[in-house]
Image (tube, rainbow, N blue to C red):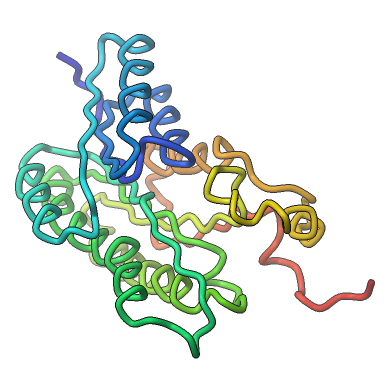
Length: 252
């Protein structure tokens, strides 16, 4: 039986989530992860993990974070499981001009991106407080830090996530729990496929001149769950190739 610290990752079957799961596994963690529609990818990742780390514990959970009843049931099941950490990576995009926003679609994005985090954190943080040790990491977005046309709904979900995490951080700091937000820029995953025609132009606007690789963001998530990160809490850390540091209007 493994005695490694156990971390829960939402949306962990593919893309950035899978990179985070792999990073945590390589760092010696037991990992549970949720997935919604990536069943085949989840199975493949589980097989890979069990082959690479046969001594440790991994578990995949089919869970739609938009389904409040299913989320409640899942949270009740894991509440007493003694998780040391939570990485909330699952996300849902909704791109539309603010004047054209559909309330139901905006609320659906808020449920997945924000409310599911608060529900999971409520279930897990009490065990972390009792243990006087815990790590919560939320994947935000530079969209919450810099305005971009068409991102009103999505940016609002990530802005709410930041405000919540900073508050939770100061509420739990004296109990050995840290709460931080990673704010990635553009990451080279399948989620960027709809923007393939615009990629070259987008990369020209990034000081580093390229999209991030998933491992580059996952490395920070892995670090923030470690003992070495025990004095980092309430932080919002951009991983964006310099995008948010740059003034948007510049000379040609």
